[in-house]
Image (tube, rainbow, N blue to C red):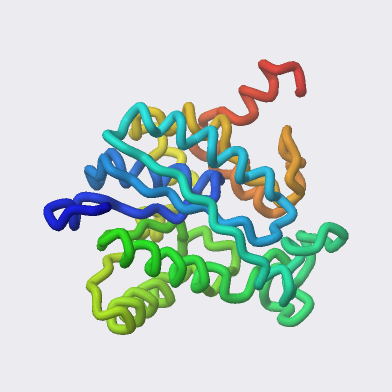
Length: 241
């Protein structure tokens, strides 16, 4: 049970176990100073569900830098039932155009971040948490409209009004390119260690496939930063590359 004097001292992180959410988690701890963290991960029928195992491993690493960190897995089948994304179908090409809108990538899941933030806000309200973190970026947003700054700001207003509770949605990666995100990770104690266990590949593969849009974007960021991806280092050390 929460105490009134704890309000404002705890943060909720929408946490997938990927590169972006991992960097966001460590930014919440080190740059924003939150040492009591609730990490919420969603199981929504994604083909790369292996990221859930990555999330659990990363939480254990992050625990070394927190006073308290809790992991919560939310299962939902609604997005899988609706479909409309190659990320929800094992046999669709994630590198193609979206079947309903050719201006969007096939990996776009309509409403995903809006849904995640709504559920996150429901949990935050119950726990009396005011600060919510999500690792979206408009600089390198892969064509996803629900990663835009204006979208997140609109959600912040809607959720605060709709629950009559003042949330603040933090997006520490919003204006960072992937290169700048890697440079940020280098500044955050424990983050590079955690990134060795993060998962980005849309195909759900380890070592990563290196061909899907997510793999290419991640590789480009590390290459431009002049740093080897710790996930690749780990795979090589395990004799998988």
